[in-house]
Length: 120
Image (cartoon, rainbow, N blue to C red; front, side):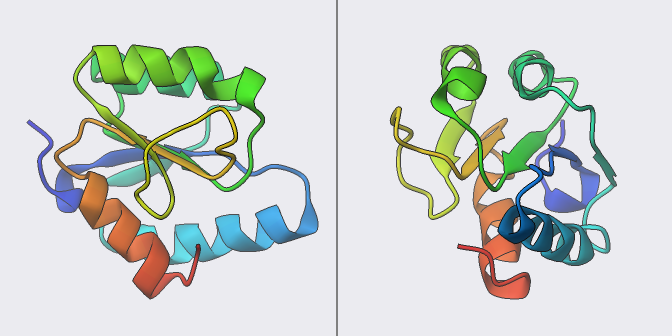
């Protein structure tokens, strides 16, 4: 089981906005040395579905719209995973900065993104 960040396969996206690109690059820089690997698949829907079924350990993204993530949030939580904003607060339809995980690595990933990468 992938219960530590060192074993985690982490997916992420990079929206085209200037601030989002900056935060994505900070996230990659902080996460790459501490996780198994990072993947960018290009589809929030598939990455969330893969977190739900265990193919990915975690998926985070700095800025998404509700229509990109609402169904995936349901999949992840119904599968027993965790879905929050980047501050660790529960998901709502207004949440744009997201982290979805198997639950075991969630706090570890959020800590790296907040403390090491400076992302909030």
